[in-house]
Image (cartoon, rainbow, N blue to C red; front, side):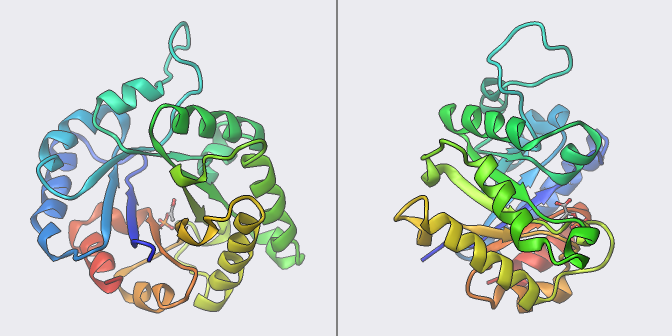
Length: 247
Ligand code: PEP
């Protein structure tokens, strides 16, 4: 009922020829993705070029962030309209690296989310606890609080994907066990149920050191609907391997 989504967040990686080669590598295998939706999120600067490479395929394009204002004197920022005009259907919001290094807060996540969906983009809203919070037994309360703040006064849930990304598992090689991930995904499904009667149609992705070798076990869990992939999305073979393991 929920279409699996596997999204690759390229982060600040890839110069021009590398970006195009990676996009081509993904597109070449797109015929084998079945019903699974594949999404690539390159750095802003390559969005238009990657769009040229993927636009005749089923592979979708997303941006890694956006700013909530429409236009103006905001040096270095990118608007929702710019992202859309570059060919994006999706945008990532609230990634932990934005929270950690660039001052992103729950409040600014909410502002970006609203601008994204009001502009016709699908927002992938990221949340997750850090290592200390997990060790202190605070995972569930952190998830609830991030969720409530991100979705404060929000009701356009048909334009949302939620991504659970435990910070301790991002780029560390540590993966949440399928049971640990499912526990949080189930909690998120319950939080969605309190907001919308369509809670069962909303995709909840897992992110944190997903690889071709662990994807199948994770996707077998009932509330894991796909992946947000960092490191392993930088090699076409690995990204394609994750998609094929998710079929
Ligand atoms: C991410 O940054 O969203 C992520 C999940 O990274 P990695 O797959 O490298 O852990």
